[in-house]
Length: 306
Ligand code: GLU
Image (cartoon, rainbow, N blue to C red; front, side, top):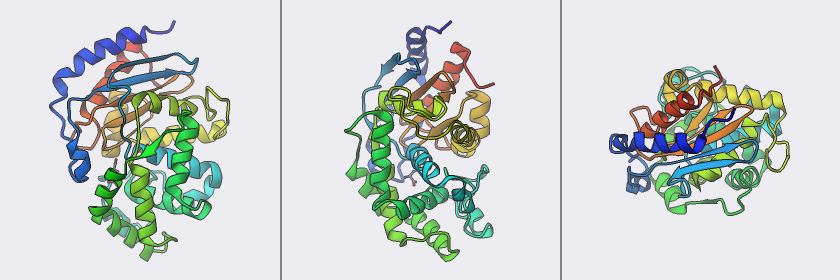
């Protein structure tokens, strides 16, 4: 029997209120620090087409690293296993923007969800598309059915102006021969990609194909074969929530991808996608109230992959 999602979202909404002021917005991208921590939105997209939402679920927010999932799905759908020659599939055990491991692992990023890995994926996409960021935008539009999905140029510019660490990562990989395009081209595309905005309702719908074994539930379009979709779900579980993926799996028990804009997309394979947004982050970079909301969601619905 399907849980009463509407009632469960209401319960969660009430429970997270005291947490909203406990997280800290990302401030290393100055434009993101302007967003209030008081926002909370959550949306559920069931594969049967039913939807449920609460709070600021219709408000656009900065997807940031959640776009790494779209970029990876697009690259994997085009290049297949060839991408693993340039990026690994292991949790890094380091912060998402760390340079340390990259030096002693000779420019091959641990996984596609840390910044180094996402820059390599942007580089791979640049070989296929004129502009990788536009390709990811188009992809986001295809999987969400929202032709208006767009960049936030103020956020993109804000990140570009302060992207010293990402420049350092890209230069290091260039030195090791793992970046084929010019560093500036890749960084510019990556910053625009990260600035894409969506609402929770749009994001949950966009995640539907990964819950639906690779095909878009509402259009039937196949994006990935079922085996590839399974593999992306596995990467989300092991690497999708920064250096806290183990704790997130323990608490929530779902494959998920988070971003420093405060968004998290999580999947119950074969059943639904759920998106949550609350800009206050915990020390690892995951939305503090968002993680708690998903923990409560899997507890109250008794849905998890375990
Ligand atoms: N654009 C951000 C960065 O490169 C994304 C970080 C994130 O959301 O994890 O730092």
